[in-house]
Image 1 (cartoon, helix red, strand yellow):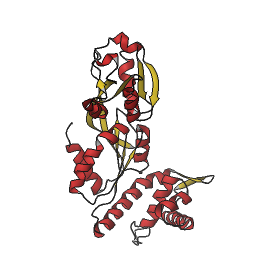
Image 2 (cartoon, helix red, strand yellow; image 1 turned 30 degrees about the horizontal axis):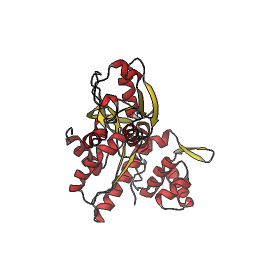
Image 3 (cartoon, one colour; image 1 turned 90 degrees about the horizontal axis):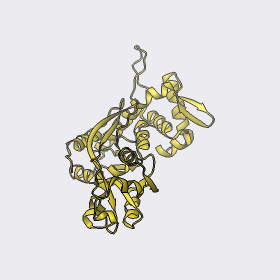
Image 4 (cartoon, one colour; image 1 turned 180 degrees about the vertical axis):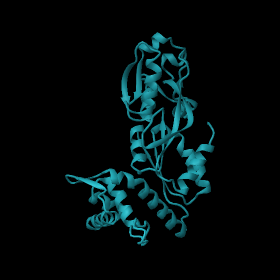
Amino acid sequence: IILLTMNDKHDQRVRLTIRQLEVFSAIARGGTTHAAAGQVARSQSAASNALSELEITLGVQVFDRVGRRLVLNENGRALLPHAASIVEQAIETEAMFAGDHAAALRLASSYTIGEYLLPELIAAWKLGHPRGAIKLSIANTSEVFDSVASFMADVGFIEGQHSHPDLIVRRWRTDALAVIASPDHPFAKRRPSIAQLGHALWILREPGSGTREAVDSWLISHLDRVQVDLELGSNEAVKRSVASGLGLGCLSRHTVADAVREGWLVEVKTSLPEFRRTLAIVVHRTKRLGSVSQDFLRHCMRSTEP
């Protein structure tokens, strides 16, 4: 499939192919022709040939060779958003005529949003797009940024105030934090003082997570000290550890709502002022979103606060 025209105004033949751009994008993600070959179902020699043909056609190198790895250079960084957009449009076109009507939607999300907000949104969206495939990866905020910046994901969802030079971060919703305890904890039945909260043992998310960043900002600014006894890598691990009586926890209200309603966790009433944080949607600054991504974005923006 031929796509891009040459610069020579007297030669209007189109020489770059979808396959070359697909291989280029895969190498940019994987860093080697071997890794790219696995992604695009081609042999390593075929991937190497596609890259050579692309660079010959453009008249420039798009990667710097660093040992065995291929690292995007200035030319490659300029090409990548265009290549990713073109490949996505080609996939959508093939899917449309194959009867699928949509390319796979690739989402990356932080844990709170991915585990507690997106499932319901995806289910509602799927009612109108029953054949629309969705690939959702859940990671911490920095990894979500990396996924969208490297075109591994079309749309990202993060917690808190963050920025990235290659990305557009759009305010989406707000979220409140809650202090939680086991039903048998002394603070489950009475309001603790600020001093008592400072002497309590806390079970929190790991450093680097969006939730931990928000919790630190909230607790450290109001308590003389925060005694962190456990740092865990998932919301569920925090909830289960708190429920077992190991200490107090602090998580998004979205993540604890079911547990509080079912009675195996209690939201502790405190004298701390309410803390609300921003949940945001992330897209690449230069990549043109496909129709599926745009439709899902509109769906998310129309959604109201739970």
